[in-house]
Length: 378
Image 1 (tube, one colour):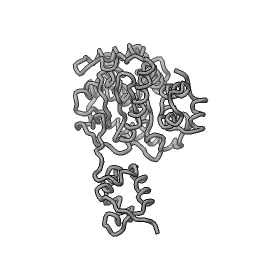
Image 2: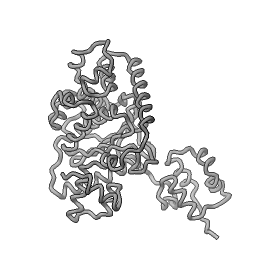
Image 3: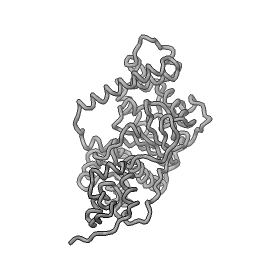
Image 4: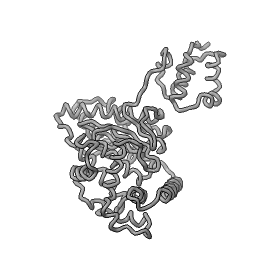
């Protein structure tokens, strides 16, 4: 007969809530857990292990006297609201993965004698928007008309990503926790976040978002690097939270992507945003947002266009279907530059394969094939 054990009701309820469930709804779908809380039956060790896996809580936590205090280490901004430390478990774990990667890479770069990145924190809340934009362009070796040299804004995004990583910023594109496709990160809660330090700033971009919106998020996060402030965002309707730094970073992104003077000089009310985006090589959403900022269109027109465009994007995504190529996805989720540092450390006997597996989320033959077939050297 299986041994049954006592449980701490507070821990069970905390674990359910932490995983993003309403307690009463979870208990309706999991009557066996309801029996534990009603004290009509105790769980077996196996049952408790299965429960901890289901709610993504380490098994040892089940035996704590009180729930652990878990706080997000970066501010998370909500559109039209203030700062919060309360995010879903999936976002929380995504942040943890990036923090572990950053901690390892920072130590590695310091031990290898790399210098600090001089652009991190070079600006502040009082720096003029144009000054920040010019400095970002200079650091990334991007001319004013850099985007116009690409056939479309998707290509422009690829080039921008490359230049950002060449500058020393690691970029992770993913819409899930690690490589777990069942643990999705919704765009409504998180378009992205940036964790800043002087050796290895890391960006996380929600790849479930339209590439159109990703461009804006990236530049916004770049501005955060320049002012030396980590943060996460939801960017509902691509509007900023009510915070001075958020507003500054938002304005930097707008000016970087669609310069004010140029847009005004060519503005024509008859031109739609999809035509204007061909000029700036950015998404129609970015053009519409910039026109709103400059008072060229009303909020109602912006929201109408935004919602229509996003719905169109979602419909196209459903029609496309499919999961894509695993290794192509892995390149974006991990960052080829970060993986190259991992590979160098392994080859120099400064990192164990088991640790390389943990940092990349790839194991055994999958890791070996990724490194052999898909990696470039830094």
